[in-house]
Each structure stands twice: as C-alpha cells, then as structure tokens.
Length: 135
Image (cartoon, rainbow, N blue to C red; front, top):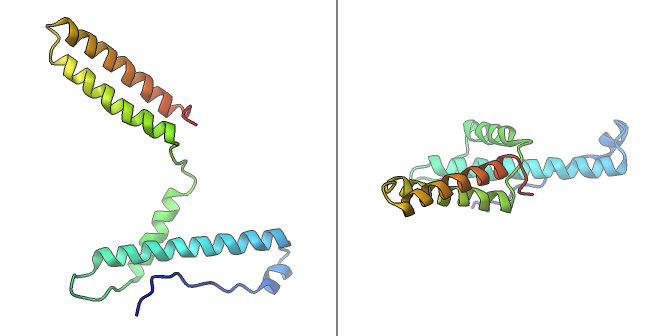
C-alpha cells in the first residue's frame, strides 16, 4: 500500500566528518539532501500519476525520476515573484484590458482617455515588476 511519504535518507556522519564537514556543514548537508530527495520524490510521484491509466496502479519509472530532477535543476536559482510583483502583473492585465477597450472607442473622449491611461498604467506596472522593485 502506497503512503506517498518520502523515505528518510540515512547519512553516516563519520563519512562527512572524515571529509572535513563541520557540525554546521554536516547539518546543512543533511537538510539539503533530504529536502532535495523529498522534492524529487514528490515530483516523480506526480509525473507517475499523470502517466498512469485510470484503472491501473501507479508506476514511477526512470523517466519520471529523470524529469523530476531536470525540473528542479531548471528552476534552481530563479527568483520567485514577490506578492507585489504578482499584483503588479495582475494590474498590467487589467490596465491592458482598459486600454484595449478604450482603443476600440477612440472616436469618443472617454475611449481616448481609457486608452491613454490604460497604456501608461500597463507600461508603468510592467516596468515596476520587471525591474524587481516589487520586493
């Protein structure tokens, strides 16, 4: 019966100590390896779940584990957007919609105003988000 609980890794501290790991280095190493292992496990299970037939048991293959590892490697070092950056992006979409609605009514003053305000606001929010000022 599957529990979907990642296994706990056992790392021999004597091996780390003989290679020069300090107590804090050993603790960080163990934590990092366990976290990475848990992430690979969860992603592998998700990939296996996506590939399985509805009436068959799940099988996690070499390709599922490899895909999980590649997925983690590709995301390594990428900054995650802050809340403010996400709100700025949502604001961009709304401002673009307002500008687009205004653009379809440029024959009337409110349409021109909506187009100009929407376009300017969208550019400002985009710049704010991309420049990383949303922290």
